[in-house]
Length: 190
Image 1 (cartoon, rainbow, N blue to C red):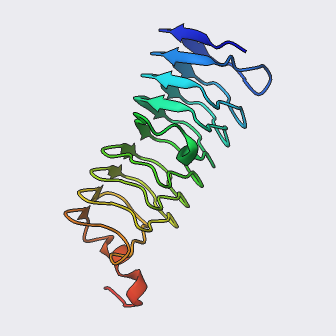
Image 2 (image 1 turned 180 degrees about the vertical axis):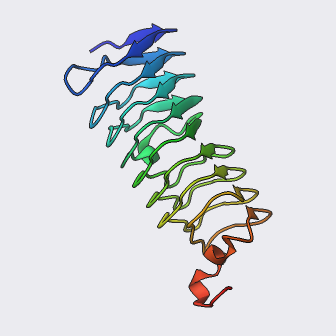
Image 3 (image 1 turned 90 degrees about the horizontal axis):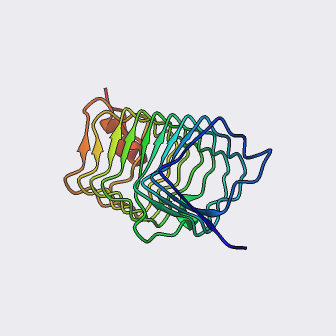
């Protein structure tokens, strides 16, 4: 099956759970209020695209290329980004729900998460160097063998990070949430 090429197009209010999403390469396209729940996006290419107020819950993204992609006000529950094509992988998230998503093993340096729900997200062995977690909820997010050097957690909340299991050099934290670094020691901070 040949793949199509789409450039500079806007797709609005399309329910791809009810119709087939065309396999192809999407360059500088915008998707607004579209539904991709459980849709197979495998082996597709998205370059400089924006997903605005879309539902991508459990979308299948095996070997999918995501390069300079902005997700705004999207629902991305359970999306396994760890199986995407990691070549030039570049994404940013604003006001998104990424609960139960996975970035395990990816290099996502300088990614911005702004106002996102990141509860139970898997960041195991992820390179999060210089990543910004602005006003994000990280309750039960998994950080194991994760590079968090120069990451910014100053406005993040509910994180639990073991300093002995992660690289934290020059990472930024707020005094209010610093207890998230001490949880493993079972101490009380007042």
